[in-house]
Length: 129
Image (cartoon, rainbow, N blue to C red):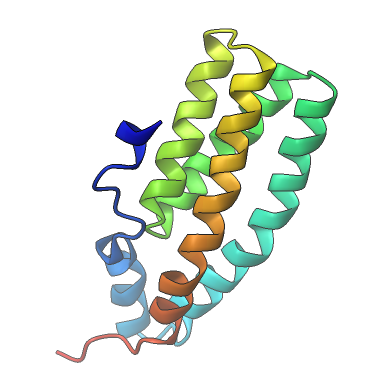
């Protein structure tokens, strides 16, 4: 719905601050590796979500949404994390399949929109003190 999209922020770089701090202590490339793993991981979890939805396997759908919620938040993909949270909640509320399908469609859209800011963050150098 429109209210879910209003003023939505896709990415919060502050979530990456702990990784930048680790990089500064010598773990070069930590942010880029973490984001690359995330960008590789999400398509596979989206496929699992699609399968669970097609099979009406709500517990599995909820589990994958929960996992995506956490991993998205850890890299600053806050809109994606928020949508995964919504799907998790809808599963708990026993929402109908059509509503879950719309929510999963939005999840895919948000992932695609989040790729560019995540890739940009992966290319940043850690701030020097």
